[in-house]
Every structure is written in C-alpha cells, then in structure tokens.
Length: 554
Image: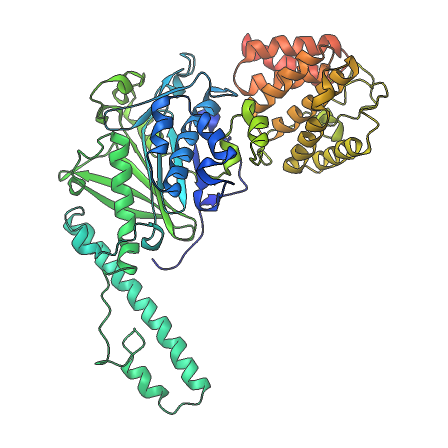
C-alpha cells in the first residue's frame, strides 16, 4: 500500500471522448488551482456566476475556508459541464440541476431526447477530498463516486486512531484485510529501512553494523529502547483503510441514501484487475446477501488518493420525492440479464485530469479569459480526417485555393486590408497552420484563439473584417473537430456562418460538428449548403453522401 504506484489521472487524454455515450471520468486537482484574489477575485466570482441556481451559488459562500469554497465551485461546474457535453450544449443556460432529499445531484432538464434510449438513465456523481475533485457519469447504471485522500491531505487537523474511530463502519472480514495489509506494509517498510541503515553503517566501516541489524525493530532504535510499531496507526493503517471507505461511500452515493445507510451493512470483496496500474473491481454483499447487480471499480488517483466508481440497478435508488427516479426511463428490470451484465461489467476508464478552464462552456470562454482565467481547448482526438482535410489548409485561414473548395482551403482569397497586413496576425496564422499540419492541435488552437482576439474589436466594422473573423472562427472550428469537441466546434462554425454566409468551409465544419453530435438532419442542411458553395469539393460530397444515408438509410 505504500508504493505510490501509477496515477490513473491522465492529463493528455480527450476528456470529451466519453460524452457521446454518457460515460465520463473527470478529475480536477483543486490544490494546484490558485486563482488571483481567491474568493474575491474576478476569476473565482465569474465561475460562481456560471452556477444558475441561487441556492447552489449561495451554498458555496457558506464554507468558511477558501479551500472548501474551491472544491464546492469545482464540483458544481463539473456537473454542469458534464451535462452540457452529453447534451451537446455550448452553455449552461438551459441546464437545471436538482438534488434528492439525500443530496444526490441530478439533471432535471433538459433530459436526453427519446431517440437516445442509450442515455435513458443518464446520471452522475461528484466527490472531493484532499487534492482532487472528481466526477463520474453513467448512461444506464446508477452511478456513485468517491475519492479518498491520505490522512496528511485531508486537512482536518485532527489525529485519530483508524481502528478506534471507524471500528463500527467496516465488517469483521474487512478489518482483517486492513490489518493484514497494514502489517504487510509495515514489514516491507521495516525491511527497506533496515537495509538502508545497515548499508550506511557498513559504508562507515562501523564494527557494530551486524549487531545493530539483529536488534533493529523498524523504528530506528534497538529493541527495548523504543515503542513497537502499531500497524493500524497513522499513516500506514489509514492507507490500508482508504480503499474500503471509498468503496462504501461510492455505493451509498450511487443509491442516494445520504447518511441513512449504515456502512457496515455492506461488505466489499476486491479482486485485482491490474497490479501495475493498481486497479480493482469489487463485488458487494449487503446484509449478508450477495448483490450481483452491483459492482465497484477502484483505481489510484495521483500518487496517494483512491477513486471508486459504483454501478448499480435503478430499483435500488433511494429518492424520497421521486423526482430523480422519474428521470430514469429504462428500469434495470427491463433489460435481459446478460445485457445488464454487459453494461455492469464495462471497463471503467481512467480519470481524465482536466484544468479549471475546461469546466467553462465554450460560449463563456472569452468572458472567462477576460476575468483572468486560462482558456482550454481539448488535446488531440482520434476522429478520422477526410483526405483533402489532411493538410494545414484544412484548418488554416491563408487560402490560395479556388473559392469552390470548402475542405481544402475553401475560405476564398481575401482582399488586402490593414488587418491582414499586421505582422503579428500573419505570424499567428502561420504558426497555427503549421501546428495543425503537425497535428499539434492544442498549440494550433492557442494561435487561432489569439488571432481571433486580435481582430475581434475590428471584425464587424467592415465586410472585409467580418470575412476575416469568419475565416479565423472556421479555422478554429476545424481544429476543434480534430479533438472531438463538437459543441465548441459548432459554436465557432455557427458564428462563422453568420458573419459570412459565403464561407463554404464554415458550413462544412458546422455539418461535421452536427453529425458528431448526432443531429444528422441539421448536418445534412449545412453540408448541402457547403456543396452549393463548393460543388467541386470531393470531401463535401463524400460526407454529404454518408450523412444522407444516416438520415434515410437504404
């Protein structure tokens, strides 16, 4: 248990990849976020303003310590960003979050559409402790999540004996496992320390090295001169205890009990999925009876925390008012047993580590930057690119191709202007195109965003300015499509179309974004318009035919 192991928070993944299926795993390191001015700063206040529900905003300010206020804001933004991502929304304006009597958050409206039965039970859960704030969501299973921090990161300021404080919370068998793992960890630590100390004595050519080795008791003293180690005391005992506690919390949070469930009623039996990545799956016994419709998936988070995701059946939800239950449109009892088992046992992917800027919806990103925040765009994705979109002109804004090419630089040559002659803007365009060509999408997005900011003030002043602004937005939309951030790509492409209705590439990218969001009928309209503007472009024709089949399959 003392080996820090590998982190399951992956900073380089695409956190939006699971949005299409409603299965997300996100983690924010709240300890690393240090907003200027703390709770009174512009960045923090702006993020609070994104929380629409007054009661939820007010609950943030009720925490005394700023560290707790940060966690409260991040957890609420995680929930709203997850809902927006799954629903394909670029802002939080339409999203309404409610809570059960047991304080389990859920999406009141809008719910996934009826034509998406695979998202019929979309629900989520959040947890925060120590360095991390985490979210997990599931499309069909009840979902609970918990993150457990080591004692020195809990920031409670209280020392306690694990066995005495929590002796009623674990079952007898669970305590035996804790004692066994804690004792094993102590033995490993003692052997390691002993070897190091003996090596130091030998290097000093100390004649008492062998005698010291025989008398060493694991705390740096000879036996009889110091207290013996107590395996269940901090910190070793708590490290062994963490996993059970996290699993119990995730289970109760999935059900929605709050504090009403006695934790020792549930016993967890872990088996290893991967020792190298320290991931485990657990079956559950409740009141002495197996609960085969439940599973817990556990993994390391960072070097010292544990994160657990619980999945369970809809009939086990605890919802006094019934409102959350009514959002679950596909009861577990309606699934054939083998189908439910497949869903229950699906791999629980590692958590994607996301920065605070990721939690801001695309429509509010510019205002967030103005408040002092750091913008975020997704890293490289895995979406295949049409062949004619494979070079820098696919996203670039410096086109020399004929006007009829929408995919391969169909943004039409623009007339010289004071705006386009600025060296800084040209440099940003060139760098963005080069980064895109090298598939360095994060860097390309930064360049295109900087270029957009540079022309924004003058963009709508003249027809040429509007056209340039449209080209830059469509360039960024093309880059966002490569990261599968369809909602942000749609927002940029839609604005680009409004600014210049002759921008074939903007229509093309808007069609791609709509297809990615499952809105194929609307995608067909945009792609048809792109074909009218660029009738010779093979990529437009190819995608148009593909989307047409989805709308009217033969």
